[in-house]
Length: 79
Image (cartoon, rainbow, N blue to C red; front, side, top):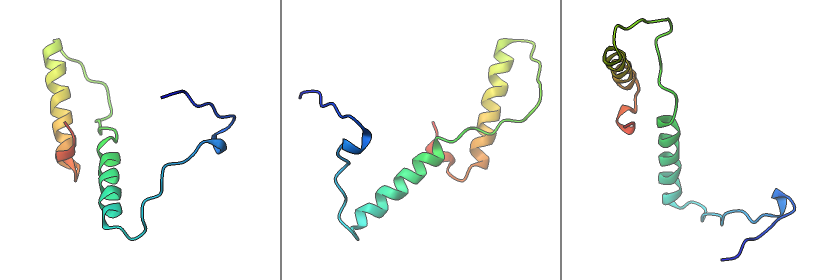
């Protein structure tokens, strides 16, 4: 496949439109909304924390992430 060059974004062809009123469109939209929510930032507790070791810092980070996932309504989407 060759490389196609365009002078501007307006010259580029868009994706093919999906058929109207297709139930698959709604499933795709919900999947994308769920993905966007899952990619959002983890909520962190503000402030400065001091740790005596690297392992203690990693354990605190894991605990913060677990607490954030429990607060999130779609916590099962994150890894």
